[in-house]
Length: 471
Image (tube, rainbow, N blue to C red):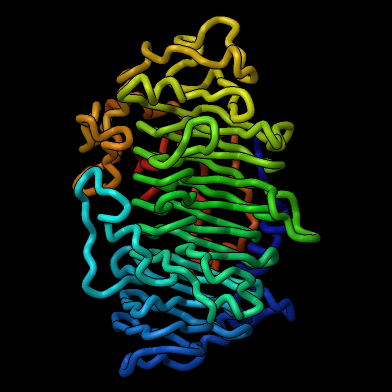
C-alpha cells in the first residue's frame, strides 16, 4: 500500500524555497509561529502560570505548578534543558511547543530525586514508573504545533485535576492522566528520537491531528490499562521505527472512534517498529498488545517485530476496521511459550488474516483450512513455532528465563541491546516497496519533521545500515 499526500510535498518545497524571513498569512506557517518565541525564560525562580519565550541551552528550570503556553504564544526549549516538575504540575500547550533536544544534549522533563527501577516483575504499586508524579504535556484544541525531539519524558501520568479541566481549550476531565495529549485536527504533532518512561494510562493520546511519530522509545508505559500511541478519529500520518517494552496494552493503535465534525477518516501508516514483552494487562480476545486497527481506521502496517507479546497484531472486526483500505504483511513474531504462540493470530471479532510474507510462515503451523473469522475454528496449536526463528539481538538472550511473559515480565531495557546481530534472520526480510510513508507534516530540521525515514529492509526498528531508531 503506497501512501503519499501531494499537498505536503508542495508545502515542503514552498518552505524550502522561501527561507526564514518570508512567510504567508497562513496562521499555521512554521516560520510565523517561530517568530513568536521571543524573550528568554528565567531560571532564577520556580515557574508557574503563563509562559512564553525560550528556555536556554543547558539550564535547569523548576516547575512549581501548572505552566500554560497561551493561544498564539510559543515556548522554545533548547538542547540540554532540564525541567523538574513538582506538586503534580503539568505543561499545558494552548499555543505552540518546540522541545528541541539533540542526540548529544537531550532535554529532560522529569521529577527531581526519583530513579528508575529495572527489577523484573514489579507490581504497579511497587514501581515509581506507574505512580504519575507530574501531569505531562497537555495539548489544547488550539495548539497548532507540538514538536518534541530528543526529549526524555519520565514519570508523567498524573491526573489533570480541576484547574486544567476548567480550561475550555483542554476539553478533558479532571481524572484524565495521559503523558502527552494532542487534540487539534488542523495541528501538527511531531515526535522524534525521544524517550517516554512510565505512566498510568495512555502514554500518547492523539484525539485528532496530523502526526509524525518516528524513532522513539517507550518503556513501562500504559499503567494498568493504557496504550502507548493511541490515535482516535481524525488522525492522519505515519508512525515508524519506534521501540516498545513492557506496555500495558498496545504499542500503536488507531481507530476512527470519536471523529470530530469535519475531520478526515483516521488513516495511519505504520512500519518497522519493535515490541518486546508487551500487553501485560491484556485479556486475549479483548485488547491488543502490539499494533491495533479498529472502528473504521484505514492505513498499513509492515516490517514490524513482536517478541513475547501477550497478543499478536490485531485488526478489529466488530466494529470493523476499514479493511478495504488497510494492507499489511512482512510482520514477525517470536514466542518463548505456547501460550504466546497460540495468540499470534486471534480470531472471530478480533482477527488478522495471515499473510504469506509473515514470519514464521503461517502455513507451517496453522491447520489446513484454518478460518481466522470463525471463533469455532480459530484455535490452533502453536507448539511448532515456540522458540523458533530467534531474532538474535545483540544483548537480550532468548528464551528469556521466565521473564518473557506476564506475570514474570521483563518490562525494562536495563543493559539489553535490541540491535540485530549480523546473522539475524530478520535482516533483509522486510519490504521497501509495499508501503510508503503518509507525509502530512512540514519538513524542517527544527520546526517540522527532521526526516521521514523510509521503510527499512530489515524487520523492526533497528537497521543494520544504521538508519532507524538511534537509541
